[in-house]
Length: 160
Image 1 (cartoon, rainbow, N blue to C red):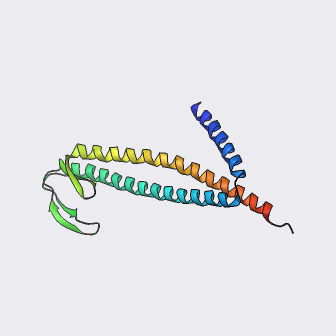
Image 2 (image 1 turned 90 degrees about the vertical axis):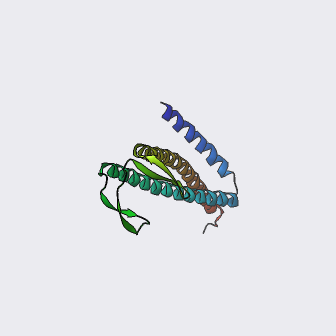
Image 3 (image 1 turned 180 degrees about the vertical axis):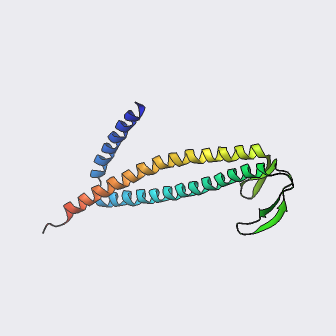
């Protein structure tokens, strides 16, 4: 029931916004359209960055799970960069280094590392959902401004 109230409030706000936009000049509408299009593009970039970060954390969580199943003394390849691996031996699978950003690493237990990844994934998914809502609203504003702008330009165009 709360979502239907939210839908009514949103449609009322959209109607009020549309009537306000109809009172604006062509230049003001162009400015609003350009600004909201820019904001939508920036939000889309942020959404893509969140997807990438979430994917990396999911890979890290899976790697931690796989690492915890390997026996001590197991020979493996250790990544130094994305394309450079060196041979190594698993010494202690219960202690891991977690990259917390900007080149800082923290030593954690395996369970703490898994927990860290899960918390970050959940946070990013929550942020993603919130950004989707904002981007959808901005896209609606941009579309409304574009439609009203087109209608005004048609009115101003000389009829043949």
